[in-house]
Length: 296
Image 1 (cartoon, rainbow, N blue to C red):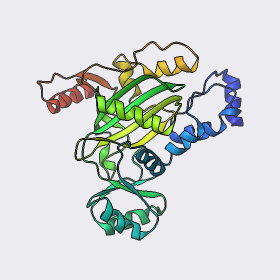
Image 2 (image 1 turned 180 degrees about the vertical axis):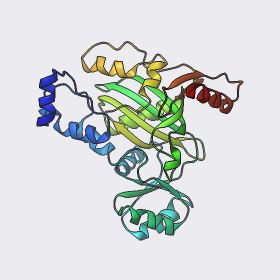
Image 3 (image 1 turned 45 degrees about the horizontal axis):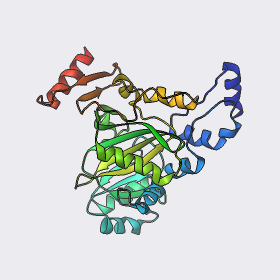
């Protein structure tokens, strides 16, 4: 932290915000040593969230819908996972971002080889494969009070072909949604792990075969990559985050609500665009047209 404090003093920085999880973890532990403000959840909450397997176990005990999971400590655990969880499981590292190490598998031999390739015994979990929508919820809390929240659906991913799972952690097409179940489960999941939440939290969810949104992970202390999406839609939760951090009043409502027609389209070498879809139009056709105009 000495180097960071030198930068803070040199630049006159008043506030430090970490964005990747590795920065959140480091600043969370060293927050008392910093010469500038932070606005982070408590240390124990950050630590729990960064262990995805431990997090899901904690949420399940509080009756929050989650993907069923098992820690894979040895090869026999893979066999048990297929017996207990089902014929198709989702392998993932218990720590890391961007879908690191993720792979859906239906074969025990392949599953064992995948974990072995990563030298991952004790570091991988097997989870229930969830076939439904890929959803996200972002909430801003101050001393236990939920001040702002927004949710969306991930539809496509940037350069998904480079990932064996098809997920890279960065959506190329997302849709802002206003879903009561997503909002309820998102907020409940945070309150289940922290009685007095502070700061910003992101919750990943995926629907199971019955259409129930199940929590797959919680990201404390940072924003999801499409944060400009909801700012562009008129709901600037990032600004609200800084307002709260500096003890100012929040200027947005407690929940984003603009229907389910706003789509966010983004690529690598092009500026993102927001498109409003009409319910009576084909989404696929509109997305292709929007993507074409973006390239032009």
